[in-house]
Amino acid sequence: MLAYRPCIRLHFLGVISMRLKVLIHLSALSSLAASLVAFTALPQALAADAPQLVQKDGRFALMVDGRPFLILGGQLHNSSGWPSELPQVWESMAALHANTVEAPVYWEQFEPQQGHFDYTNIDQIVEGARARHLHVVFLWFGTWKNGNMHYVPSWVKIDPKRFPHTIRPDGEPIDVLSPQSRNTLEADKTAFVALMRHLKQIDNEQHTVLMVQVENESGNIGSVRDNSAEANKEFAGPVPADLLAAAHKQAGTWSQVFGSEADEVFQAYHQAKYINEIAAAGKAEFAIPLYINVWIDYPAAELPQRQLDTPGIAYPSGGAVQKLVGLWKALAPSLEMIGPDIYADDSPFYRETMKAYHRPDNPLWIPETARDDSFGKFLFYAIGEGAIGFSPFGIDQSGWNILGDQGWKAHANNFALIGPMSREIARLEFEGKLKTGVEEPGQTAQELDFGEWQATVAYGFPQPDGRRAPGTKDAHAAAVVAQLGPDEFLVTGVDASVIFHLPGKLPWIHSMILTAEQGTYENGVWKPLRLWNGDETDRGLSFSQKPEVVRVKMVRF
Image (cartoon, rainbow, N blue to C red):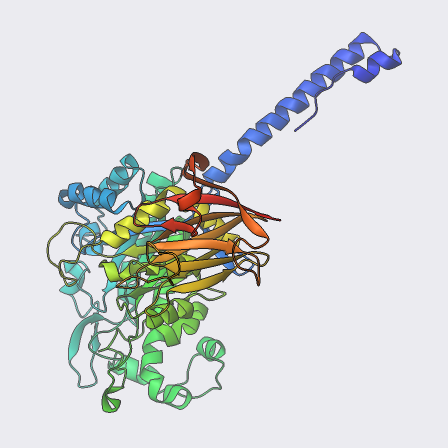
């Protein structure tokens, strides 16, 4: 900011006329005003930017209005994106303490007659979200939804000659559209462009819509690839040069280059190119992040003779499953992210899957996970892994579905804990200053390394004197620790305690708590509530199910 000291030097010199002083005075005022305008315009310029993904030092952030944003999402049931369902949807979002709703857009509803678009559902979802201070991630249910074509318009379904189906090896057609059809691609692309154009018209300034998912768990269920005469002719020919480069392979036919995986890679190639073209056209209308979600490849059965993953049966063939993420990233550069849908609460598998998708070229984003309580602790693993968001599926009150009637108490409790400081958590993640501890069976304590300070996290609450941490019956405890300064930390947790110490020293040896201040964040500002001491600190900072957050300052002596 300009320092405003008009004419002081002129008085000392006594040689400059009053007119010149006035001119300098006016000039200074003009410069000061210009600086004030530039300074005050800066946040507005940042706020005007559409949501975007940024990368720094190998870490990612979803920037919304110029600041990192952590999605605490809730995805609706498949048939809940209708105006008649929205009242109960908003009730469920409030109960979940979510900040973002994931809502489907159905091609069959959006374009009931070719070239005629119905924006009713979209507009009501955006308006309802704004009224409740929520953000939206839209899910485009187009050519593919869970490996099928069930959401395409009737005028597509009844015209297989124009919009050809995938053909099985035995010559039978299945209810999946072929990605090698130019007609189908152009029809889907036209609709998606109309969607993105409309979103820009209604949301270019307010940034309610954060991202759009292109298709849903794309791929073939029922055949590894299309076996039409046209597809078979291409399959017998040479592998395209761009795929050879992406796969680091030498030239040859599909079978020569990819062997037993040739059919699946063939499908993946055409599918990735198809979706990339749709995404590129949509992004030309509205440049917000676009991603795909994936029906992942789950572990095979334990019996040796059954340990065969069969694409097209175990998962939709051609999708960006774990082994194909790299190829998809190379072939579909218009997609910012590939996000795994994870419905197995086997902790090692869940964590391995997150690591498979958290790559230098791919942010971690969990667009779908199961809603029951055994999945609650994976939010903390995701945050510790640097995820930009986490979203359980089927959180609204639409009755029984494939997941049964499990509740989601753990997700709601976790979102209530993290929600008020989600912006701060997102920033600390992006700066590499946040770590999490998560309980596993038989592991009742662990160390978090912050260099000059260590944090011992113990699971189970309370922890009596002289006894090791008891753990919890279902191994659900977790803690979040973030470094705010050289000796200051932000700490919270669920059924866990955190105590700080110097490396190689026991707690209270050459160090102690200076202050432990419980508080909350309100619009990014820390609001202290009380100081912890005595029983609340002597055995570490202890957290139960109640959402509590502490800023602790340590001191050496």
